[in-house]
Length: 471
Image (cartoon, rainbow, N blue to C red; front, top):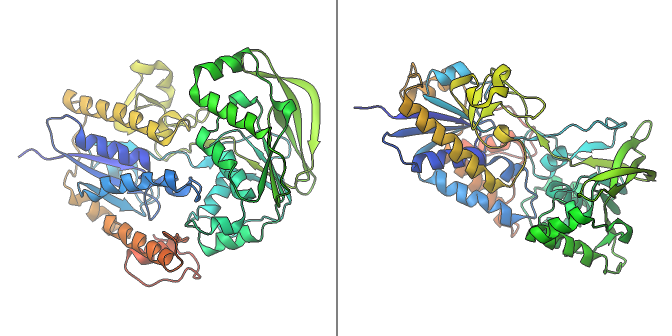
């Protein structure tokens, strides 16, 4: 009897789960056996820890991912960290193919004077806090009254909205008590969002932008002098319905009169940050006025403006991180690959003729960089698994030393790694929903690794206890 083709997927966010799902459904003439590994106690990656809690529509993607794992044909090993608990050799000894889908979860670097001053924050760190990531602290400094957010994408919009929104309006979401208390104590009165280019080049999605206009007790303030549309801008508006909707919504904001709300959210365009000001901590932001050059790009005018802000949030994008025993392209923040086949770093420029590392693949943001929406990872996954099937058919993959399905379980247990399976996740989910029901909410997140592991193991826990390691 032919044994199943064994596949390990490292990272149980949308990219990893889509890859597993597509591989199970793909046309093939062999049986597959798929194991998902996740370093956190729960799966779902940035859908759980990167989407703002007041956007349950996007978080609904989790329900679709749950249905995939509920089928029972894909095993989950959470609380297992690649490079710490298990290495590449141990995986290739037990699997025919290994797919890395570890994503991007840290802030892209920004080379700006003053970027390291106290009061200068990466947006990803703030998102991790309000999304209750188990590996970050439970306090966040919100004593600044005037705040700058750098960036013109949805993460910048999320950060700005959460900063401006009243805490009581957030309390209907899944945030735990420490996040609510932190937001309740916030001193913020003004949030300034700065984009380097014009309104037609903003990367907001129309729905997110429209939602901004409905936030209670927040005035949206825009500046007519920022509304320039060159030939490149008009071409973008005419060719893209999304750009047209964003430009229209922003233009509609110019017609709004301030209502005297407790907080104000200012949207600035054509302002490029050149320095974060301050000596011991952030006291301001310096921007250079930009002008459109006819193509939709901008050039500096030499006109500078200093803004009195006491904190700066950098929302300029995420970056990939290097993984042990794998090549890494630091400039692009990806595992070097050709259409999902991981290649040796020194050979990456050779594209199709690259020196492929047999049996090792990538998908999602760690494959192509942190661009595109969650749904785009399906195309990535399809490309990658097509190559896996082709490589299997071509006979270029080596047989694992220990091909049995129990081999990985034996290894983890021999190391004393207390992994969380799919049933364990459901116990965490049940506990979070029970906590929410007690407060008339859908769920309340368990915020610590120790708390999640206790629930996964069926133990009573207290979130007031200090976080503990799962290993």
